[in-house]
Image 1: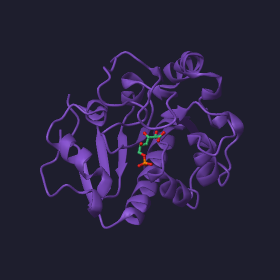
Image 2: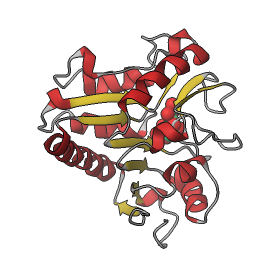
Image 3: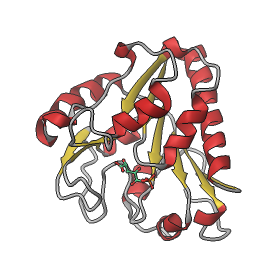
Amino acid sequence: MNPAPMAWRVLADADAVALAAARLMIQAAAEAIEQRGRFRLVLAGGRTPEAAYRLLAHQASDWARWECYFGDERCLPADHAERNSQMVERALLSRVPLAPGQVHPIAAERGAEEAAVAYARIIAAAAPFDLVLLGVGEDGHTASLFPGRPLDPEAWVIPVHDAPKPPPDRVSLGLRGLQSSRQLLVLATGAGKREALRGWRAGAALPIAQVCRDRRVTLLLDEAADPGAGPAVS
Ligand code: 6PG
């Protein structure tokens, strides 16, 4: 059965998107913990989600029931400031009472191939997730799935090389990994994302569109990223 059409929520600005995202994640956590005793969340990298993570850290939740995974990681040393894991650590994980075993970083410092094989075992064992958080690139990429590259529907985790967004080497959840979730929450702010969202809404086979196709999706965007009023995207 196809899920409900995608929820496309335009908010005033990036701060409003961050607050709505934090509240949505807290709500999803409460439902998952009540129904299944735990909340399995895949975290997004990049800049957009950072404000939402900082707000999340001030919310009340049964943090002992959270299990955090990553949607992608850059092949940099584990303590490199540009790592997605470092951003998430600064904005969220250092501010909430999670035990080390509740956070599952991608060992991207070991190289894309080796890290992808190791993380695929972790992700396949953990799926399905309760919520996968995603950003959108200006070219319509999401996680480290970039346009023009065929997506294997069976791939849990893939190595990425020659990424157009530096650094070139990355590890990313693949289509199967990102879609194995009860819901997807996508964040997009700023005028730079407008064309990608316009293409997505027009049916372009962008990575974000392929990941979200036929899934339960909420897109939170600000007015700057809004390509104009338009129908929901199924
Ligand atoms: C990364 C992210 C990437 C990000 C988009 C949007 O490693 O950079 O995984 O997919 O979500 O590029 O980035 P911004 O949120 O910084 O615009």
